Length: 379
Image 1: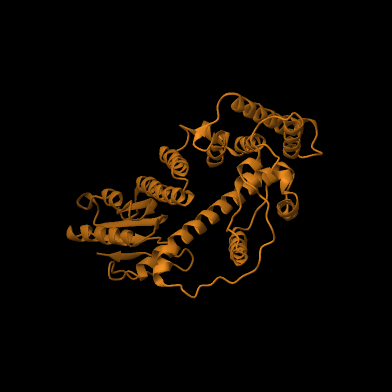
Image 2: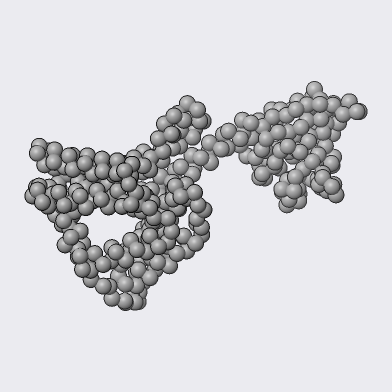
């Protein structure tokens, strides 16, 4: 969506939309570019279709003297080799850091998120497994070195990476060749790059959007949880409306966490049986944590229960101190009616929480040597 919205802006000159003959020329060039990229691979894979589309489109515009905007009309890419320098930070102060840090953090988050998203997408397309930690460290080192040469920080980009993949690139060599080639064009051949029509590049990016978009997700509407759909749409809308990927991801993480808590809270349940002594045994299924503790309390009726009650946590997990408080509260409910509560089959994680929460639940956990079972009486 972000790539697509970025291309729509190319249909404007200043604050005005392109209309009339210039618009028709641009649309025709875009259509021809997209057609070449789509149909050429069906005939041959010897030459990357994107490269052919760019060369053919640019050559046709130049030879036919078609009046349309080019890269040079938008900006010049001509440049020179940077000079190494150490930034002067002698006047740095706390007030300056307060201003700089939010922007630095936002840019770092956006860069890392974009790079990891690109890495994940490339892994899917190439059926390989990347190294996220290596990618993050490499990006940090590269941006630091770039700053020492007066350059701008950067990150991996979905559009350029997809073009690389579609052109046959698979390893590190393709990225290195692309970087060196771009450097050579900027230093010595910028005039040729500036001849490329904007419409040709828009057509290329439209094909990237079509190839990147997961069309199968449209069929998932109605088949996946509603909260997941709401989360996905919210992230997309925030990204497009604010152009702030970091904010969109943070919102997505929060919504996903709330969705998980909601669903997990509703999935906790018990299976009731009786042991040989006629005492009720409740096998807990699901996750006991802050969101499910109220539902956990509703599963038991101490007044109607047997004098000894066993709660089996073999198929459950106790995740936080809210769960410990829920167990303690349940024990108090049974104690008030003169009945005894037993805990069974607590996992290692549960035992760790119980051992560090003695002030909340007074229980000494005894581990079974084979099954790591805790069978203690509380209340």
